[in-house]
Length: 348
Image (cartoon, helix red, strand yellow):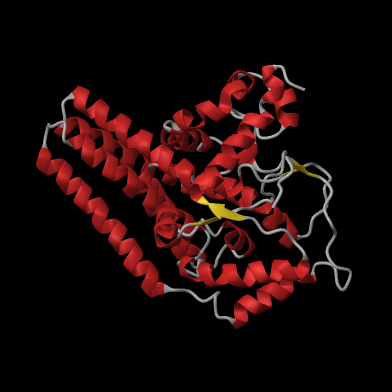
């Protein structure tokens, strides 16, 4: 599909019954049994991630004060990425149907194991799902550091104005700071309204970092501990960016006032990433981003079958459906960043 930079004029839903297009797709998903919980899948998946985490901690304690710990740091970056994907699925109630169970699991995985506020991230991610790629309403495309449209570039101030000139080249280097940024934003959010239980979440965050930093500096010399921290957090941030960036970056942006029904708002701003079992595992099912945005609580193992149904249905409606390979998705995202930053480089 050809992707305009800004989405401001799209065909309206069919006249048969405005808003019924998604209802029909939802009916087809339910008939296929794709909305049922998959407890066995999540037991195996979360159990494997838990064993990997325990193995990483055991390896760290066994190796002691050695530069070999940098290999452990790289491996633990992948484990932390998988923990982030687990927290994501818990937040969307893909694992448990009840809110309390989902929230408890989210607090354990996000706050205790990752050092990220579950409440803050939940608030932010919910707003993203409601208005993906909306210039003003999607917090994931806020022009804080990077700019995501030419309109944002022309209005950019502060760091975004400086970094935006070369943001495509700086994108992956900046991702090395994303893990630390999530933790910093989490502590900052404790003072705001997005975290409903700041004392609980703050206590869990402090406990995480007390164990994390305490363990590192107890086992390793200061220099090696800092090197471990740099490798672990840097690769963790790149992993997160490699999972989330291909899904929406480079897809059309929505201007204020653009009218879209739910199905078109989600499909036209999202991109699926092909690649088989490896990409499915690497991205935790988020490579089926279109289906995930249409059915956020759909369990990960159902998304592959849902993709076939959704793509065929979009073809029936004449709604463009975007899917590409992993490398091509990153090229599209970087090309978009370069193009929208042109006004800051003296372009039109």
